[in-house]
Amino acid sequence: MDYYVHAQRRFVSHVVDEIPGDKSISHRAIILGSLCTNTSVFTGFLTASDCLNTLEIFRNLGVSIERSGDTVTVHGVGLYGLKSPGHHLDVGNSGTGIRLITGVLAGLPFDTTISGDSSIQNRPMRRIVSPLREMGAKIDGQSRPGKSDIYPPLTVLASDKLRGINYTLPVASAQVKSAILLAGMFADSPTTIHEPEPCRDHTERMMSGFGMALTSHQGTVTLTPSHPKNPNPTVPIQIPADFSSAAFFMVLGAIATPLRLTSIGLNHTRDTLLHVLIRMGANITVENRGGDDFEPYGDILVSPSQLQNTEIRATEIPFIIDEIPILAVAAMNANGTLRVRNATELRVKESDRISAIVSIVSAMGGTIREYDDGFEIDGKTAIKSFTADSRGDHRIAMSAIIGAVAAGVDATIKDCDCINTSFPNFFSVLHSITQP
Image (cartoon, rainbow, N blue to C red; front, side):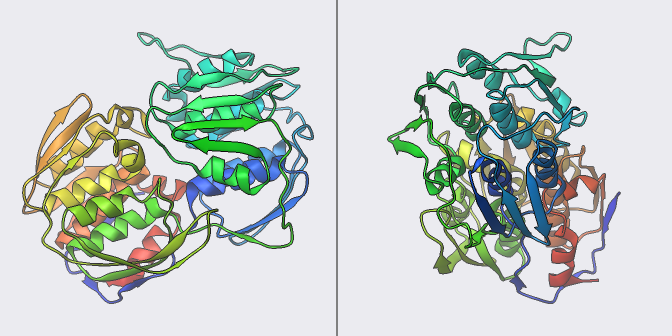
């Protein structure tokens, strides 16, 4: 599906209250809820294809899961209650799904094969396969001509018992950390992970919430194998609205029209874009804070400002990696130069996002310089009407659309079906605040 932005759009509302549930937390809700020894109810579950694929995978593994709108009820079967699915598991387009679920499969007493679409089959998996093999997992993958990594489909052979390891992450990665922690639930001894830099902590928060023996201090996380259990199975657990989805409208608000974004997740390992935009001079405040140590949230109020570009620090990259495409749009509307380096991870997302960002910025008429690990964008671009190809990447597609709407130009963005992987109601939210 191609999407057409018409220059005559005008803003008609300043409230955005339909941002869907957090994608990262929704994946973990299904995974950890399935491994609990009792039932868990989650509200605000993201009903996008990535998370629905994770839900379906655990149904195929023998877990009873009921869904009504954005409420899911997961009847946990415990660590050793999963059943052989009898066929390959399909994560669709989800890198989070395949990496986290492989951590679970590593500890199971039956063989399983897991894969996804063509994009997933070109995503490197050595980063999780290597530590899982250290734990005793038997995992076979595919090779690619001229490349030294391991690629899906991954076949995970039956395991009697994994062993705990003491592992230092080569780079900060919440997906790798989570895969190891999930496998560590099946180990015969504690698993300790050392982070070179802090990264997202949704897995640790949910494990702790479910009563698991986990400690985290100064970049070291230790999990002692234990059985997760929901302490309040009759009380729904609220999944906040997804910060990465809200990011598109935060940038729209900072460059085009005042907006209030309601009940947005404010986990400190996720909200770096908020602080970067404030550093750039954005007029942003947070009201109605709620939640607890599980997952905090609040309303984000943002209004147009004179933005000044900045340099994204190496320590910020792991926390802002998914928001860099829409940050590039903000940069085109700011003074000075945005510098993003140390972001090689962008090369192995749903697309080569560095190359894709260069393509859309150039299509809009911007000035951008590409590097192996990032890019530089010169600001104050007069964005022109353009045509851009999303390359099947949802964040590239939404960034290009927001860029066109904010600039008030005609645009054609190709291949926008991919948006359903993370933000299925993106267009209805956009249409609620703008009209032709």
